[in-house]
Length: 293
Image (cartoon, rainbow, N blue to C red; front, side, top):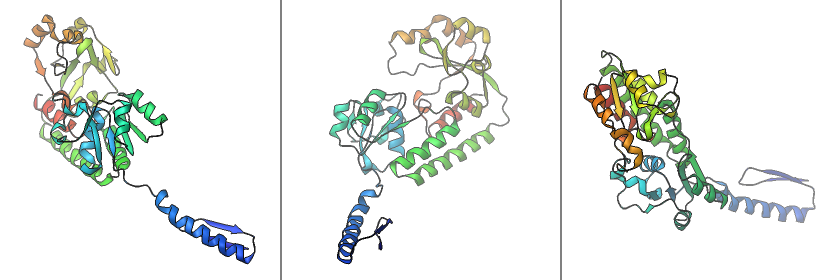
């Protein structure tokens, strides 16, 4: 009887003769030694992002040489907070054919964008990771840690989280003496933003009461212009910072009645790039909101 172990830490018991035992142990040890590198989880070196929010996280947390490509959304001036970091990185349009050409060892995407491409790539055997929708600042911290693990940049993620926590604490202290104000968001297609959303949590951190949440609205729901006016918020946030200002959906936020309402109320205009994705940019959004209280 023989017990022999290899580089991967397995112990095998075999009942064979002496010559067989020697050959078996030699074979097993060599196999273990050569297999060990294959079992190690290497830091990904050809990461492709196929959506705006993973573009931001990849440009923020990953080493430059790890990034094989980011999506075309990373170059959108209204949407992309990390646009200046793109430089000469290859750009993709989130198509399966493009992504395969980069031979990625990791594809990152959002659960709510390019999901069909992500699904097909996973079926083809590619390693695909999708970030969930963040509904609070705490969710952002969890997301950053998760993304740091995927890309092998855990310490960078922790550094970003620490900086965010320090900045938010400083903002809270800076504006602590100012009174709370009420607010409602009005977006294209007549949508507002209620409870259980990142935007609602940002309002809370900035010292606002979101009247849509108080009405029982959760998530993103349409609201009648008459209801918005009757709510009589101290502040209106009208989302006009969009990449397609001439679309039919944006006619809602260009309504003449809304312009009249704005004349008699404070108007909160927070750039979309500071609040559309989960990341450290939200601290700038909170700061701008708090300044307007």
